[in-house]
Length: 224
Image: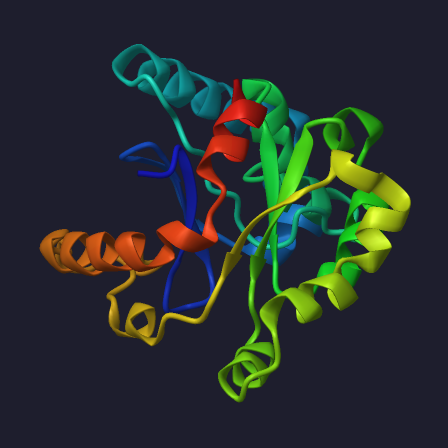
């Protein structure tokens, strides 16, 4: 469950959901950022979201030895004012709150230096490595016999030049077509509850397949 979710409605408005409670309904998203009230751009709203996330993190840490936080969208959305800050709530602001070792997931290694340069210095210091989600084109090249290490060497040259061993590639994940058949675990529109059984079967299978491509020891070491 996300601590904060903007749920879209059919009329173009959104409902603001904190945890499992709807705290505001039918919010006009344009007016929310630009209107007289500008609810979504209000610093009090921003703090309320962060407080909800902090509470959720505290509860999860009390119940679990390891907590994995999944970001949403780009690591940094640049040039959109309060909208950028709003989207960043699910990314580096939460990572900073948790003081979490952060790993960028990308299908383009050459884009990593630019992403890092866009981050605030205190957020950039949290980034410990890169997970490469091999794009379909690169996967096709691997399938016809081009060595995957050669692709990584070409794509990661700029990272190594600027960051050296401080920014390792901790996983290189091939394409898993079966993921496309899974239902949305956290759908944006309200509907019948989704069974987790299909997810468990598919994810367990993929975890076994993916294990050779993931340097779990490196990830754990960076996260400690």
